[in-house]
Image (cartoon, rainbow, N blue to C red):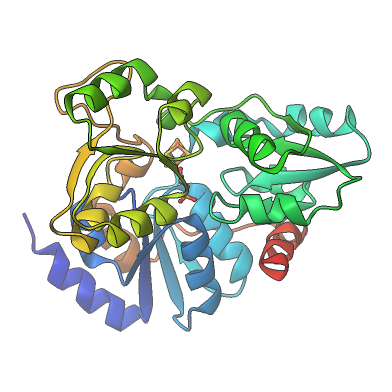
Length: 308
Ligand code: 13P
Ligand code: SF4
């Protein structure tokens, strides 16, 4: 196998490129990244970047967000096929009908959505800032939230707001199972169950700490002697273990236990070092967005940053 790491390092210099990777990328890809973060951190880093070329090792909506924030830069994705179940479950025409059926609502859309869905939204949020964004909406204003029903329901419970929610789910987080997690906890009673709010209500009900990827990571770093059962994509365990070398980390079991009992996002795992190398060398595939769509999809993201 070619030594991709050295070659990627050379290409980064030659192209004045930066690699931003999501926590759910595998260890090899994380090792060539200049920055690793959650959705909000990747968007912020893309916004601050001085590089000419930004490669997003994550899924397509993350690369699209980087392009919205850097319309004049080259934004690359190792593959354009890395989608997201939430994007796939929210076809723009149906989402538009959902909005039209509920006039006079504030439309809050999760960053895990297509450009078209963003373009028809008033504001975008990530799991790290969703609660703050909802709390800032005037009390008298009704709210529509999509595409993640689990996150929407959790936000409604947290904030006491009446939120009408689109019926989508992350297939990875929705696959964790409360019964299996409770059994794992019985076998390890001091373990703290950490869960992402994209998990089902029953899973959040047996969890001790609920938060976005970076919030869960921070919790582990602050409790470095702890034992944890982690109900989110298994890639985050790499950064958790780096932040807390003495912590004991176990991936939460999904409904259908696989050999490693770990949950991997198949979209995130489409990226490989080979594809990263090829993208940096050829400066393809690029994210290109038609100007009108770009402006409409960018507005709710800029509002998200303005309201943080
Ligand atoms: P965060 O990165 O905001 O925690 O979201 C998790 C996720 O599923 C990203 O696709
Ligand atoms: Fe989408 Fe879920 Fe994969 Fe995140 S983990 S990219 S929400 S399918």
